Length: 530
Image (cartoon, rainbow, N blue to C red; front, side, top):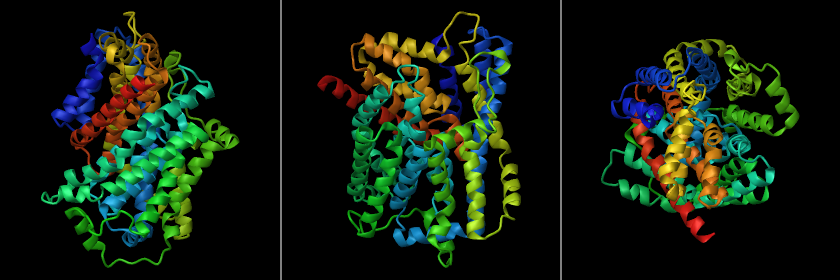
């Protein structure tokens, strides 16, 4: 039965990662097989399977809406010439791809994660990186890997506020877990900028002779920023609150990073670029722009401000989450079978509004919005199919508790099976279970909501720190964002890499595994010491 329960994990890994099938085909096969296994072994009724399909379709709509907003943002910025101005701005600050990777994928993406979450950062940063000269594969890989460390505190602390609600929703408990999390992640999280540059150079550079040199000379700067980020996160959790960790940490680090670039602190004189980047730069070398840098960045600034205000100002949040709420509750009469889509609160809506405001600021006209939007919609057909079949598999997997075989859900079956045989060294397993949850569900919050209680119970039974184990769960779930199937499907389709999902998964799997392993080791040390 354990192989049946693991089918939603094994099939995507094999079909996408090993056989390299495109997501539309691989995930369609996975969804069909999981549905058959669910009906045969878990005795899931036809009605719950049909309800899961409709739930998946509904859940895909907010993701597609975010994709629409992100893609319209990019196409509009290209139309107004803002991308050219942003590119020139980066050229003046630093033309080095290593610098740009940290500034965009790690820090700007981290800030977007802090105020939004839900897969938005990679959808925003990957297209921006392509516009600046990165290859599509490099952009997607780096954006996905970067959207890990901040995700444990993403969307103003939602993984703790909602994810741990089944365990203990007392503010004091959540703050304690948040503080424990930042202490455990102090080591692994500090390495993330260094890992990103390693991936950039060793995966996407054709100059094999100087790879190690190009990476090593940048390590002092990346370690400085990584440590600064992690220490700021630790201090924020201790003195401000867990909700603002992923906002304050990237914001403070961005300021220090820009200062260090301006004054050439720990920045090597040599510059780094891939053949793709050099071609892009040569194609646009003569381009100039009269647009101010603030005006060019205005849509992104508006997005960040609107996301932050909508998440922090409670009356505004209440209005946005209740007015024009398109959520679907108790689908087909199944209690607890829900799909949320708070339309005005959605990052997709705020991205779209930012595009319109950006057009008014940059060219004082919104005439191009409708034709651009129509082109984007036409380009998203295969994306919609891939997302829907992926989410069908996910919903059948998570809804398998609705069965007549008197079995727990497939995720809980997996968790209980693992805990039965590996409880002695559970701290090493805890982050991997969190990553497994995110790999399938695509959410740090849902992974923690699913596995939080069992992680807590195992910690109690094994007489180890509950806070340490839950911290490992949250960090592992955040690392799982790197390999989450529907995140990969969404971002790859956004940049024209349809059919390359397996290739992307293979590139992000190793850093996700390493992250979880480091967290397990640090967690074990914490348990021994404290």
